[in-house]
Amino acid sequence: MEHVRLKMSSEGIGAISIEDIPQPSTQEQVEVTNPLMTPYLRMVHIGVPIASVKQKMIIDGMDPSLLNQ
Image (cartoon, rainbow, N blue to C red):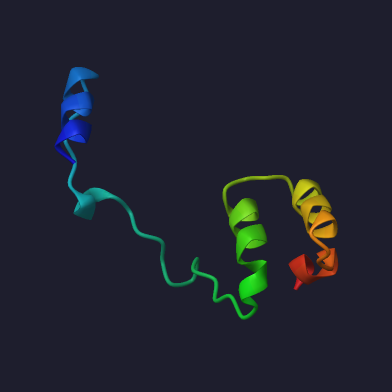
């Protein structure tokens, strides 16, 4: 963690603590009922276009309509 602080200081960024980082509210957290959907939901969460995620699901043999639920 020290290397991160050193890099931040070399870039002129003030040090922050882990408590300063906003945490997602409980409303933003999604409960995954199907563990097979986890990689696809993660892709959507990081900003991969839905059409690309659905295409990946088809390639992996998954039903892309599961993403709409």
